[in-house]
Image 1 (cartoon, helix red, strand yellow):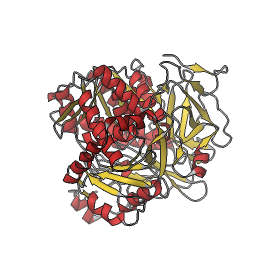
Image 2: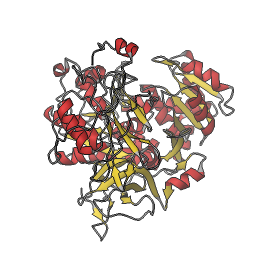
Image 3: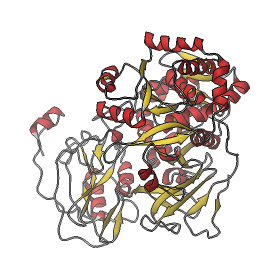
Image 4: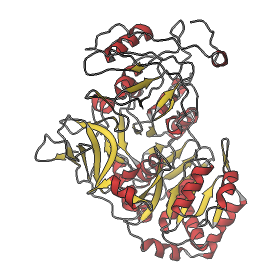
Length: 606
């Protein structure tokens, strides 16, 4: 595949190829075509429930639920909320709502009562399908708490209960031809899905997506992975997010491939077992999920030889992790970048891309899209090699934020979706994401990016995760925080330290050091690892900082001093071209918290 660019190839602007052509059918029509071509092949396997459906059987389940929706009085354009973990029934509802023109509202399984209430009211959900409970969350109890305040909510149905069976039984009152007539009257441009993006302030916004948006994104992502009807895709990523329902489900059904659901929530051992048992050819996940899958002591006992490709997204792929995947035989892993508002993928590495592109970039523009790097203030396209805001234009850009035209106008300018991500495009059109505009530290005319040290920290063999954010200080002063996610591994006086407060200004040491800060900061669910809050290897934090139990923070007056300290104290070698300077001065030593250290099994000596 080739990339077309501007006549001025020095500009950070690339246009994707125009083959294969865009799909103009609705999701329902596309599924019907797949069923006609591959009806006897496996469509879905739910390992936890023991469900195995061929495409013909899957289509029959979808049709029953679609008829039940019509029989229950729900009409085209009404919203159906779904609040459940990954399960076969989730996928059936996804395709059934699309068949009769109902807009599926994905609800994050981690939501609490106030978030649930906001989503139900803001989108005007008329029907809510859910599980009664998942892990420690009592969904039924939370729904009852908010139900009286949601005027549009007419019915709630729970999977796995007699109520669900009764709901599906209503399908007997509607003929298949009536449902097909509704499906035939739909347009690919119709809204079919609302996904709420995580709000950095206040409540999230509902990105409204069409058949054209998500069907084509799933199809084209699958094309880049070279999917065919013989592929079997292991999908441990959540369905409520585009990663699961678009890049997973729609990529599979648009190619006749099989969807494999290893468990309701991410479980490394169950994922590995599913890959082995179902001979999966593709595996999805964020980097921390792949790291967790390699962690079990019996990892080598699993037969993963069937895995050819997959998708890694959510954060950059560390070089060491990619080396391990290649060593395991997964040589065609692809890296994707995007956002909910763009359906989601805008760039992707190709299966035959080199190692450096897979670990150093998020790929190049996908078919039928345009991408560019623009000046965040002026909107002008920058030169290649210059950092700026990444923008996307084309079929994948959302219809808008549900019932929020002002916010839609702020995000989409002249057809370009402003992502808020900082990016650099290289001469070959490959894109590197360097951070968020809100996270970028501008001090003394110099831009500081959290990822600079994150990649450096990952080279340590005992390092299991990393994250960096800025904390605004007075006027132009900024702090970038680095915390050890597994503070217990280190022995000796520097136990628990992997990083600290980094402070620099354009090639010159500062006279005034930054003070240490051990205040506990609030957690952010979006930064949790696969094992949940505060599990080993998890970095929890917010856009204003990070916290790590038992971690001590050190201050530096220059970036090279920080690198030198890491090399000297932690045992990470200084990278080529960066001298291992002496560490910056240690400020007042924070007093250890006796109860916290005792709880974690630390002795109190320093």
